[in-house]
Length: 287
Picture 1: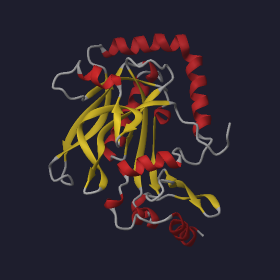
Picture 2 (picture 1 turned 90 degrees about the horizontal axis):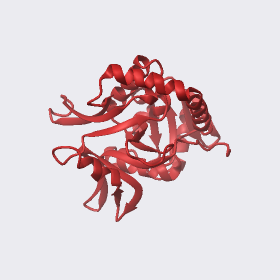
Picture 3 (picture 1 turned 90 degrees about the vertical axis):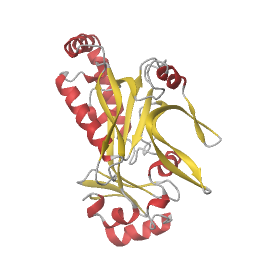
Picture 4 (picture 1 turned 45 degrees about the horizontal axis):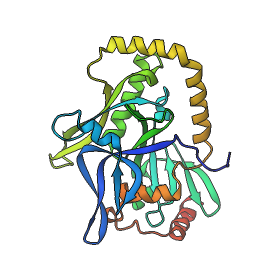
């Protein structure tokens, strides 16, 4: 295995609740009120829809995809959803610093350093350059053909990250550590807040799938887990080893996509720093 390269769960498609549109010569993110399932291929600046997208819409009323039937790859909530405070160089897309609120890994001129992580508001570099919570959720969609592949949902929204983190913990607890075997659904929900000026803010939740009694779901999960428990343990061990093999999960190419959609330069006047500028700031503050 190549050292320093994070081996992430295989991805065969994307799940999004927004898209990037060109406005006045700039590509800017725009939120949506429905899910979009895409392939990993772009054409003329737009992601190509995955065949599952239209087939699922045909099964729902209203013409919008607001519920997706899914299952999990793992029982361990932290493998299904990886969420950290993340800072990217918005010029190159290169990951710069990733932390969990206690400790962070930061890229400097002298290599990677472990430093205390007070979160974006308590970090001078993070508050200046736009550090955010950033989560990646891997799920399998009912009807996909690849047994080990997954669809990735990326988000920097507090509501989605907090809700999904709680749901994954609860689902694994109530199932006795067998969340992988539960039939679930990703649900799009809306809420209004003072910060959103009372306009709807959409976020992602995960629930038991409609039409199946929860008691039966839990009994079926127990039976399925008994048939393949060792297989799942080996799969999770392999996933942990792969994710722990690199300092950052995103490569520079993937980081450029993340920056365009979730860390746009227009959000902050200080974010157009070059790598050398970031390194100089890090050296002054860390060293």
